[in-house]
Length: 205
Length: 205
DNA sequence: AGTAGGCTGCACACCAGTGTGCAATGGAGA
DNA sequence: TCTCCATTGCACACTGGTGTGCAGCCTACT
Image 1 (tube, each protein chain N blue to C red):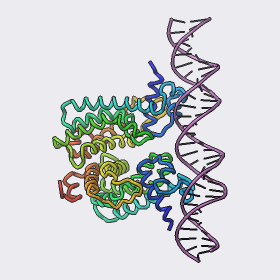
Image 2: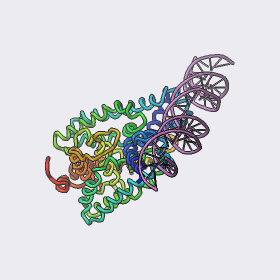
Image 3: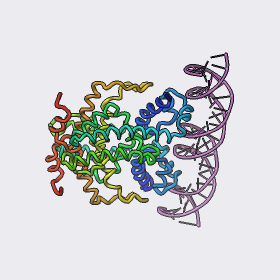
Image 4: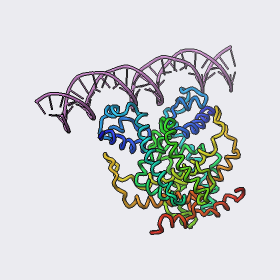
């Protein structure tokens, strides 16, 4: 039930990910609904953004916790993480964008769990000497995370971004992008190129 | 001459770098001036932002052109570039922030020269096999550039951010940050860790 | 058929930011 | 001292976004 509410959330995730300053009007029309309707589901814009962030954080932490508990080496866990996250990378991009948006301060707290799990993973890799130590785990994880989504933004041209956000397409460039993003982030984490390519599957050049 | 105008530009660079949505009021008070005064120098907010961007682009392209023409290998040139840019990294951060701001579209064109020079440098490195080729030169250069300033943002805590933005302090953490940012970006560009450390000077751990 | 609930399409009030006009102030140089 | 000029401190109009109220409508369910 609550089909409309879900669609609003879905669309808002996309719209705000692209432009954190998008107004209720933009979100509404993108969701094929009138502005007034959104206020029927969310009392305020902040409330919508908060709900949105909570949902994204929940999904992210689930993936991270699972990958983190798999017992794999940190670099392999990182690869698994990117592989799991990549198909909806443009979705989670909102986590980056919202920090800089209007009430980024209010949102920042919600992102704590994600930051923590990412830092844990990187710290684990640094402890077992598979990740470099030029930067603290906290900063390194944030930057690596940012790199992945920066590549997601530029590489896959987001495909058809029409009215409905039906994203079933893991198209070819999506796969290529995933490979590039994984390798690049691994390199940045200090994993040697040979090992990175081995981890990601040494297929095509 | 035009001391006030210069101070406005300086301060605006900082303020907008931190928050691209800052209003004329914020900039004015940060510059120790009343809002009305800014309109005496710049007819509109867009005009201020454009002037600002042009100035930043000019300085950046100067550094890049010089480093690019030095004849050094691409990785060494990159190191020189970061070394030159780092002391005022938080200043040039505006180039990243403005792309996402209100009229990022209008600004994007101004940044062309910087993007081009960066991509040239990276492409040169890829051609001579010192940089990795998982990503196109265009994307790789942008991401590496972003990484450097992301680290600048998080590492040096921006020091005293009081009323006047007098930034004479290249303090200790600034130097450490520069080293970390250079190594990290080199790793991401595909330079082996040993070579990266050699390039940056293999001093302390 | 009747009814309930979600959606619509207006109408507002409100606020924050932009850009302008104009008189007053105050300091630096002729 | 007088004058210029930048800066100030108001005033205002305008815009665009938020959030609310209310009457109507349309659909699904009974």
